Image (tube, rainbow, N blue to C red):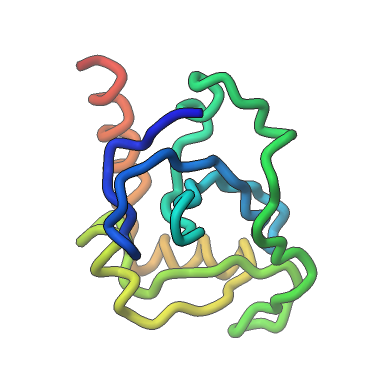
Length: 134
């Protein structure tokens, strides 16, 4: 068991958090931490972090499986993914969560980012490169 270094965003309890998985409608698995006190799920957490803690990603409990449940709000294609209209990378997850969200298929999601946030991928790469070199 590994403690996460932040208080729960729901109950503010600082305790051991358990890694759990959410499977998004496009089939991608994302890892989150579940509070041992109130069961609030928060994150996401980098998969590498969870593996470094000694967990097997394939054995994590799945708390939410969204496969086959959502269609794209733009083109009606199946297997849509949940999209933040306020990009998380601009003002952070907490602020982005207060804005509307919607379902977009992978193609529409990528097109939206190319049109609205074309520099996001470049900035993300630089941020990740800085993390590995510092």
